[in-house]
Image 1 (tube, one colour):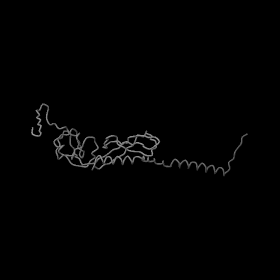
Image 2 (cartoon, helix red, strand yellow):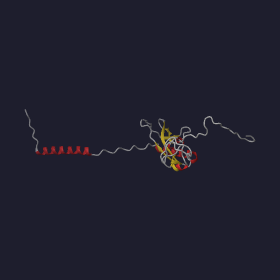
Image 3 (cartoon, helix red, strand yellow):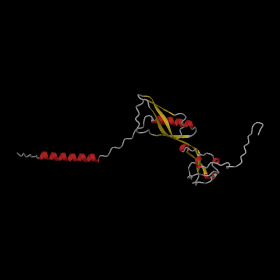
Image 4 (cartoon, one colour):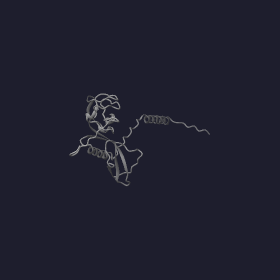
Length: 207
């Protein structure tokens, strides 16, 4: 037996309204903007490490302007919650350029110890090139200028006195405004192989 179902006008209107509402809901969901990514909150010990590194760097470089940038730990690390952490320096570590600060948990269910990367900038007056200088150029005092620079930007010592640079030649080109460092200069040759050298010793009552 075949049954025929008749839909009245009211039911038909309700069905159409439902379909329209469903389409509108789907369209609204598709058009809704993606929520912005949440900013990862600063770790609770980051400020403590920053203050510790800044105080230690100022103590190691008295009279210098110091800036400290705290880096991030390896994202794969999973540290247990800690009620109290303690930053420290390993041995006689010097906070200069790319460095690191030890951080240990001293009060928690699980104790841990990590090293936090930090970048320490130490600003001071040093010699810079007044103009671009090619490799092999013999430096004159007119090639030099004084400027405040980040002394810790490179492991090689920056030059601060013109007398240490004048008359020496460059082993590599230096751009204008670049800090002049010991590694840029050829070593001084005081005497050649085979030269006769006389050593004079002086003391109380003798020479």
